[in-house]
Amino acid sequence: MRLNMKAVVIASLAGLLFGFDTAVISGVTHALRDVYQLDDQGLGLAVSVALWGTFFGALFMGRLGDAIGGRDALRVIGLMYILASLGCALSPSLPLFVVSRFVVGLAIGGSSVLAPVYISEIVPAERRGALVGLFQFNIVFGILLAYLSNYLVGQMIADASVWRWKLGLAALPATVFFLLLFTIGQSARWLAAKGRIDEAVKSLTQLGIPDPAATIADFQKSDVGQGKLSWTKHKKPILFALLLALFNQFTGINAILYYLNDIFAAAGFSAVSADLQSVAVGGANLAATLLGMALIDRFGRKKLLTLGAIGMVIALAGVTVIMATGQGQGFLLALLILFIVSFAASQGAVIWVYLAEIFPTPVRARGQSLGSATHWIVNAIISAVFPLVAAHTKALPFAVFAAVTLIQFIVVSKFFPETKGVELEDMEKAL
Image 1 (tube, rainbow, N blue to C red):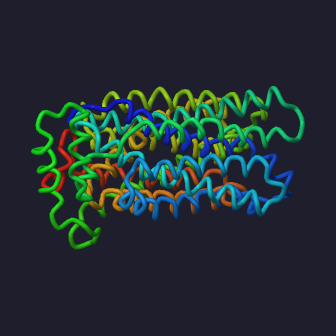
Image 2 (image 1 turned 180 degrees about the horizontal axis):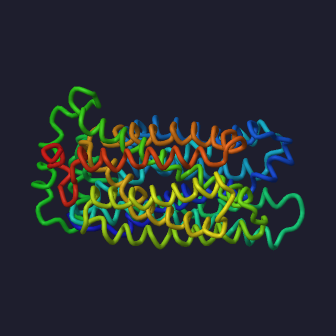
Image 3 (image 1 turned 90 degrees about the vertical axis):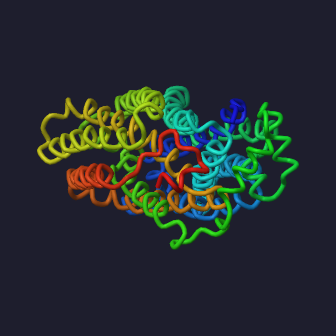
């Protein structure tokens, strides 16, 4: 299959919105405490409500993608991003803010399912890792933009409304994304799976495929009897998807990103220096994601996961010691950067690629939904509990993250199959 780079780039922009809306909340947590008079439990709820939305978005948006196609489902997602961002920025009360954050979560969850699946279906197998990885690149680019935006807006606006501007800016890239989606086509694999053969042939012809009929026959041959996602038919991909999603969140990545400013504050840094250090962490995240994208189709998914786990365990153990002893705060930034780099070049680069490639086409979006929903439900629980636990024992969360990541290293090393370079139609045999 030839490459439609325009469609890949546009679909991957869902990742930028995913990353921006995920991280931008870290710059407004103190304002939310003051404006809505929140205690630790209330703040955990205000932050994690988006993650519950993300869980439901990940769980059900796959069905929408299977029904109307990835491109059209992404249009729905783009519209949700626009409306929810404006709702957060303009909300006059806590209930409306919570509802808007929930809708943001629905959009993020849908993005985590639909964009990787759409991209995986329109790119060649030998480049699938790097090109689906472009979605992850845009996630971390969006995270960096959120940190940078929070810092710049904080410097330019001094009044109490600054948090509204920080959240509302997300509507601009969301609008661009929504409009660009009207310039790309549906996946030929999805069209063929739906029996829309003429449209699939037209799509492949536009890509310059010399024998579209033969390509469509390959698509359909692998899809026979695969119309319903079930444990009996898809036991192995389901198991690998659940484990990968669970391990991804128990590294602590999103809890650390959401509460990054609070972590620096707990170690004694000022608000301004915490914002700047967050930008440094975001920059390291972006650079390491590029490294992961460059290596994923060369080294493979499994090797990246195991090497990254080693780096994360070392970094998390170091942070645990700092938080437990109150000593060595000067090493905190370096350890968090080591953690972010290790995560971004391994788990960050691999998860959306792996989830998007291990299920058959007719159930790919629903399979991705299962893995993504697991990812987000664990994320929601950890993010809600993190500030409560950290208020009593700063070290314990990082110790737990280190222990589970060590378990991840063992499980992936022994049981996970390598999927590098395998055609989607041949993936069942590879598993």
